[in-house]
Image (cartoon, rainbow, N blue to C red; front, side):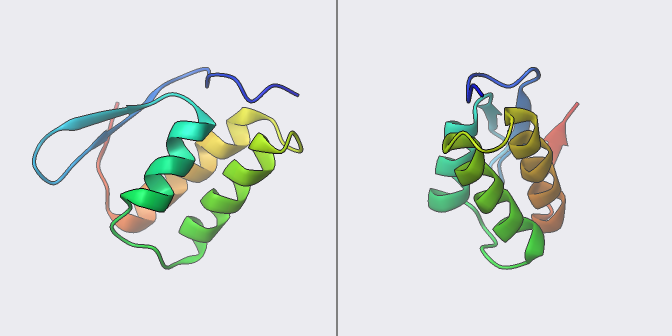
Length: 81
């Protein structure tokens, strides 16, 4: 299984109005661990776990993308269409 780029990029809006383009599981995990505003909650923990599993080769990349989107909603982070 490849942990390559996601089929669709996720664009998250920061509090300062900037945009961050997340297109790989590695990018998502880095953001979750280093810059996430809310590091509590089931969706956050599920997203971190999903990213780790994808990077270990146990899950396909789309699972991490879905989990990242769920964590974004849980944290109230706006995701651009």
